Image 1: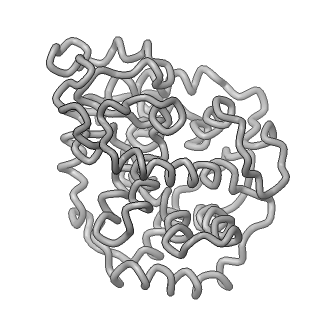
Image 2: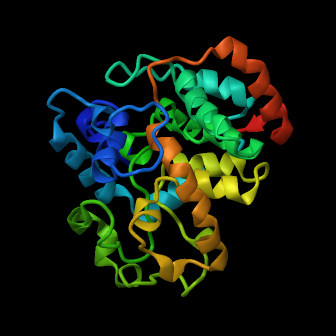
Length: 293
């Protein structure tokens, strides 16, 4: 579907990090700031074009339909893009060059290592450290040709009514699922308390990386990966009517991970060559040598 879109419709943001810039404006409060850096200084673009964020969400809310999500779930079944080691996938992600990020000139691998090293410094379990290393690896979707609005952005369920607690909810007026009665009620195609595992989430790097990792990591880690962009739920309290007790319990881990995701960047680059042996051992503890992508 999206192959016919213009370049602006595919990629309205100057940078993938503009979405995170917007997150920091929406959710500036946190008890975690390892770098002592003023929150206003993170991703501080000179006169950032705020309309690009609106353009992004207009496209995201228009095109993230149930049919689109089902199409992507089928297209990105693990193994359809071969196999590769996790570290090799990180090096592949490293080819995603972002010259517009004002926070850092670091490579993608260095950013992933900053997140995991901040978690490691705080003494969290090894699976938690590994989750920090891997949570953004799903952004390789950009390298597969997916538009920004199908890679980043706040995530939300499709197949039921869109919550007013999702960012810029008025843009859902352009989503064709709004015209389908069976998809526009509170529960839609789902049952009360059915559990989020039975709910189709909008497509992006979170869902893709969850599908790659689901056979290897503990449930706590999988919740962090799959729902770290589900701000309507873990920050606004929406969609509890679809959650089961396990979801409600596991979301404490999503909330614990969120500050590391938002505030782990610093001006001191990690020493990749020195850290690589530790992380290759950590990866090998949970993953086979080759992983299906």
